[in-house]
Length: 394
Image 1 (cartoon, rainbow, N blue to C red):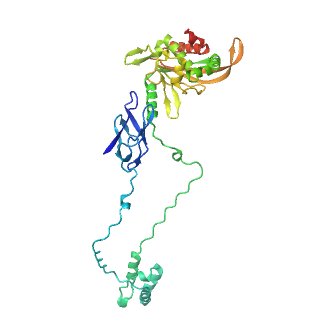
Image 2 (image 1 turned 60 degrees about the vertical axis):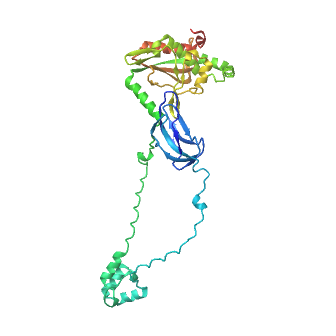
Image 3 (image 1 turned 30 degrees about the horizontal axis):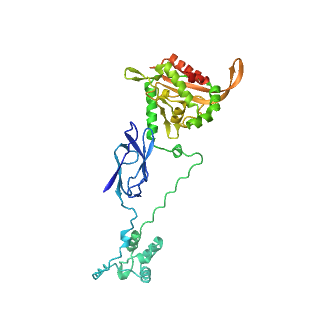
């Protein structure tokens, strides 16, 4: 009996996936836990493995198809095709038990003219016939003479000529490729968008179409937070088992800003504004597969160590010098952190070189006023430039 291989549970709130790639085909022998296909969801790509050893009976869905959790992907005939040899090769040929029937007599064939006789017939033919044979190059043995005394006629030559198959037409010569660059289509590669990439595209386009999005900028001096990090990073890693990055400082700074300006932590649902009294901070990170957003839930209740463990290594690397981040609904604001670069700054009336970072907050103007966006960004700047504020809550 064939075993059904079904779409496994794919995580909280994920009900469907796309069959990104089949790793087997019908008739293949598989072993237990062998990967069969890759499923792609809005968030992750997962492999589905064989639950039994056997042979693939069929693939129930094609690559690119959308499947629901619990849906059938393929069938495996348990035990089939595993270690079995060819039964046909193992069987000896059966000995005949009855006399073989006599072959049927061959049908009568048209008489074949021997080459010597054919040449004689052509020589005895009229001059017009002989000339036609020379001009057409028909072999005398191919001519069946029908004239008097076995002589060939012009009609016989033409009949022999018509029976010769026409030579195959020579392959058309490929046009010469002109010098210079190839047509653009020859230098393009068309690849179907992954499910994750389609989701990103749709959601970000939705933000542009629905939100009244604006962006405000500021810059932050990273001197103090970098000094604090350099001084305590080894002790931090020994205690928490995670690297002390900049993300935990920015998460804590954002929470301080959200508590003072609750509109930045709100969203629109229909005609209502929903103000949230909890702080889930999403950290958008670019990967080769697309944008992923690990979420630090109840971040206000977590320590620096818990936040760094949740985020892991994501987001530690610096990005561009400056960009305009785009909202990802239902967010009302998103903070863009950019490259740290040494720049001359006026500090206490003197020009000093400082590690500076541009910050940008894009926000939904339907919810957040410009004043609130600016104050939020200033609050983040203050907490980063004077990180002791985060410890004292001031």
